Amino acid sequence: MATPLTPLANSSIGLRFLPRVVAYGVRKLPSSAELLLAARGSLNIQTSLLHLTERTAFKMNSVNTKLAVMDDEQLLDYEEEQDEQQVVEKQENGAGDATKKAKGTYASIHSSGFRDFLLKPEILRAIGDCGFEHPSEVQHECIPQAVLGMDIVCQAKSGMGKTAVFVIATLQQLEPVDGTVSVLCMCHTRELAFQISKEYERFSKYLPQVKVSVFFGGMPIKKDEDTLRTNCPHIVVGTPGRILALTKSGKLKLDKTKFFVLDECDKMIGDADMRHDVQEIVKMTPQEKQVMIFSATLPKVLRVVCKKFMQDPMEVYVDDEAKLTLHGLQQHYVKLKESEKNRKLLELLDALEFNQVVIFVKSVRRCEALHQLLSEQNFPSIAIHRGMQQEERLSRYQAFKDFQ
Image (cartoon, rainbow, N blue to C red; front, side):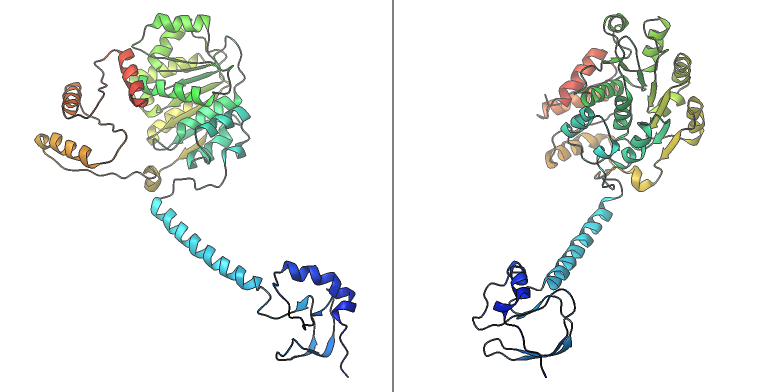
């Protein structure tokens, strides 16, 4: 014989689960409806008949139910909604994967952020001001080891964030001591040295106690000597020739240097004169120091030479051609005769949308002639070449950088 159902009004189980029914989104219940509700355990129902006004009766034989049996049209089906959402997510992810494949392998392939490196709050704040959120592949590989003091050899294309690796790593470990040069960074050109010094200033923005100076040829050496005597920096950036001259004069002391960096080292180690200067400078630094070497191209023969300055270095070589191509960069070329170049260049400048353009030429004469041509055609331009005084070159470089 069928077991009679307990009316909802007299059922403590029903009263307990009623709020759950409302939460699931039933908008309106028929006035004559009776809801069959069961507690969380197993409730064996022999034969039950539930009438919902004049609708079809449902016969239930020996079923185990945990929550409530309701009208399908009134109860939201969360499983179907979840399935639909998963399908949409898969489709979107598929499209995202296709986009990533089209773009290449470089950009933000890691989900980690700079905060995962446990950097000083002041450095993280400066990184945030620069608009950086996720480290590049090179930064993701190198920074965690660099901040621990490990020697680093890294070869990767320009634009992949190598400079930020050694700037962040040295600032993170730096403990400024008045009158002591703790960081020495050298590169092969004056402009690059100037640029690196600006990066140090940018990332040490909220570290006011850190002093940065840049020394290179073409500028009066007396000015550099005065800086070292009256306001000795903690971080020195420069070219090998000027750094060696300052050390030989006794004005620049490197006996307490803790961090030694070579940027674009293939240019310095590959050049016999610069390599000699670098070797002489290394001899003036302590044996116990962190050495970091970076380059866009680093032949195997030079890797052997570089590692002579180091102790069991971590080596990062980005040799994959896909990764050596900068992310988002499109390259085109047009084969022309010499007499056709000016006309084609002006056509391109008229057709392309741009904020700034950098044009490289092979000689000082060509640089001056092209600068005059662009000015005559109402394209504001700035010429920079080796025939200028260093102060003038830096002034024009800064003007271009500031969109002046």
